[in-house]
Image (cartoon, rainbow, N blue to C red; front, side, top):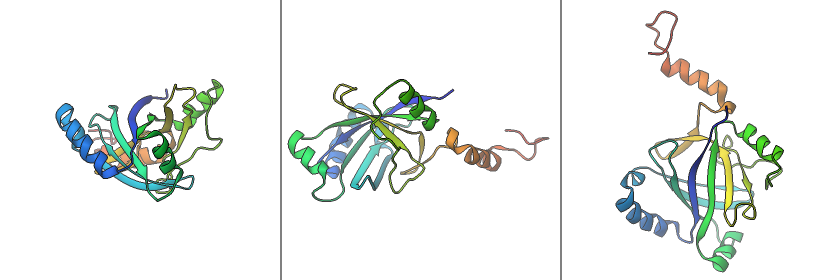
Length: 186
């Protein structure tokens, strides 16, 4: 059975450093555990350079707070920020079987934005697609491959349907006790 959960709420901001500072102040009072791990990254998707930071929820199925900003001057993002100001850009749902989730969306007639799933150039294993703001009453819905956090990086989740080979390798390497007859988990 495919599992999907809300992973993060993403804000589009003008100044990423200032947003991190302000949200550190807010979360430091409201939920300090969210300030313990922040992942940073940059990349491009569909020709748009972006930088982002995510206050990671220590609960793997808890909701994190992400901020992203334009990574190069004079992108379409600058025009949107100039017109709208900073805003909630998307709510992200992660799936442990991304292909199946996208198939379900299409079969249900949901208006999927991209004909082909996209990904950041720095993480080709991370797939995403979107449902439009018009369907979700003003906010973009991101559908993405479930990932896990390792230090300050996003890594492929070994339990995803797309990572069956990785799951077997990790299980064999880390979860099998050779002292038990026939292997097995400790």
